[in-house]
Image (cartoon, rainbow, N blue to C red; front, side, top):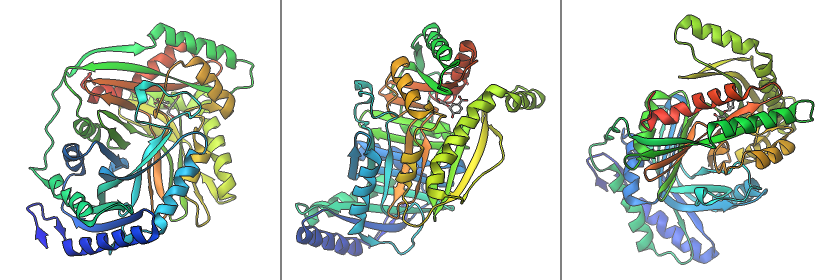
Length: 472
Ligand SMILES: C=C(O[C@@H]1C=C(C(=O)O)C=C[C@H]1O)C(=O)O
């Protein structure tokens, strides 16, 4: 047994015998064998763990549910499952179930968010040809981290995953697993980010051109069959120095703690954000989904703020935009929840610089469902695509003229039982070195005003822009 300063205690003989059994089984069964060990971990900041991971590996993932209730920091890849096209969700779910089927688990605790967990995401539209911007982010990519630090209910857990193939050797697998010690090195603090780190920024397309697109789409919506189409745009930023994802996440954690924080880092690119929008959660057959659509600014005073909230609640246009989302989510979940589905009251979700109309949905599914099945049914909701779904997607392809990549698409995790949680990857940016591409979109309905939609998209860019150093 080896005890380190950081008090991570690994029973190395136990890990070694599990790995040896994995090597034996992989050869005997002539297939990959997943081996997973869960340990108690010290009170170490998962974000520091994520930051240290950059020294060790090209691939890192981060997830935090609102208020940090469940934090997952994954470093290095033990395995991945990628997929393209319209079968991407089922392909990944099937391959994952197969891998978990023959797994060797050493987990005396059984805590949610520990053990074998796949983390990653999907592109918004698998029918749109990909571009260089999103290289390394295919239609679907879920990573099994080699090392996963979980914070749940105030305690930390460390999972070490290995996937052993018939070609693996015990010595190589042991050596890879033991690199975990390097992640707990150092003082456990993140260096702060220097303020004013942005040198230059531009709207893509240019503001007037984007408003022209909104105008044209709005014209199409008047009297047509389409109810709503979401149009997005980019804001491209050039930093003074390379953006460090962990420091950016650290600022998001301070300023947007009520959101889902997520990051998927692959080589020099990192997609990250702070999204207020859950797509769906599945835990013990209980489903939760979020309808979020309809937006207005926060007020400078409590009175003004309350007045703006009232204005949003009374706005027929925003209510219509919101209702499309509620109806679609209920319809899509009704197929699996039947009558065990209920819609909470409409209220306001107040975020740091924007407020939204919000309706929670809860339901129950029968045993054996997996979260990816629910993600497939729900994505894209009319909050990100439009309604009806297919014609709205076709219109986005025709008018938007950009590669959304993983923006506005599902990002999250699934465990070995098929449970997990996905958020919608909005309020997000793709970092690459000292460059960042930020994304924001707005629901367009008949009667939408291009200038107001542009202003709303600016509000939605603000969270990422402020943490990148571009003002409040
Ligand atoms: C598309 C975005 O946000 C979505 C669009 C909203 C709207 O149009 O009112 C509100 C919340 C989100 O569902 C984004 O932030 O990029």
